[in-house]
Amino acid sequence: MIREFVLFAFGVLRPVHASRYAAELGVRQVVDSAHASCMAPTGLISSDVVYEYGKSEHLLLPVEPARVNHIFSECSSALQGFGRGGIRIERDSRHA
Image (tube, rainbow, N blue to C red):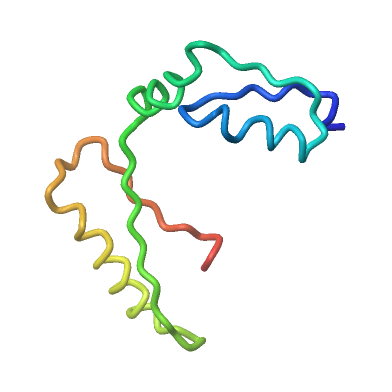
């Protein structure tokens, strides 16, 4: 049960949200740290830089593969200003 866990509050607005979340979840204990407001920025500066590009377009099925490839190449061209080292381009096959 989630009520058996402790809610660990972090981020700048932790006092605003943590007690309400705890009440709604039935959690009886909230841990708040004097340094908790530094956790979100620390995570941000220590993470990899990720850019996600997407495009929404109304298509009727079946879709011509050439059209899908064109849309993908438009998204890929947005990376023109970046060096090619360390860039990985992936297609999300879950939506194929």
